[in-house]
Amino acid sequence: MISHLPGTYLGTGQPTTSFKIPRGTLILPSWFFLPWLPTKEIFLHHYNNMSPHPTTSLVGVKSIPAEHLALASFPAISYADFFTARHSAPQASPEQWARAVFGSTPSLTQKIIWTVLLGIPLAAKRSPDTIAGWKVGGRGKDWVRLENRSRILRANLIVRVSQDDVSLLSVVRYENWFGAVWWPTLAVLHRYLVPRILSGAASRMESRAAKL
Image (cartoon, rainbow, N blue to C red; front, side, top):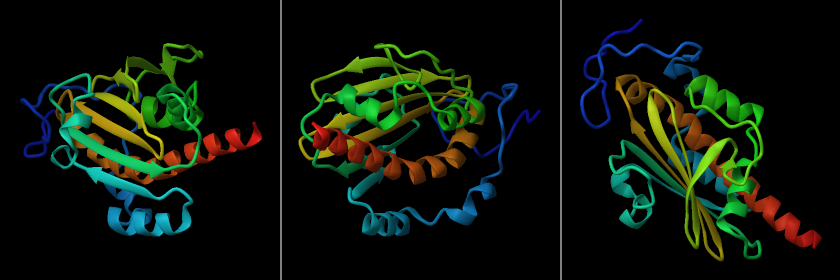
């Protein structure tokens, strides 16, 4: 058990030196992700050249407008990123978009990333109160917020829609030093996947409209 790792706490408050890594949590070193992860700018430029749904991103709490961060369910945010993809789908509710982005029930990949790697519990059955196993914690005219937490972090996934754009705001609050060390490693994978996820959701929503 690692009991203390000085100089690595990136969140708010004080690190917990007696924290035990949750049983069953899979730990991968940061270099595991490096061979196939270019920088954000290079990756998005390359991806947007191939994607029918150009994507923009903002990474870091200070980079994201306060009006978006205000939708989070907790005030002390340790990490945030905000991705936006263009679309040509007809009008749909934020919840419909969230289900297109994540699915109504968690997939195997989601279970591996969220539960195995982060210890986040997921509801297995389809419900109007959950999306991909996350609790629907808040709704607005153009947004829906998914909430969950584990022993190492709290997280919100906030889907926001407009006539031409669909956005995903991800916010995280570290609950201890281990979350502050572990999430930045997985966040690289997260930022790699989100543009693809949003583009896939946009394609599905456009395809459904074309079949009507």
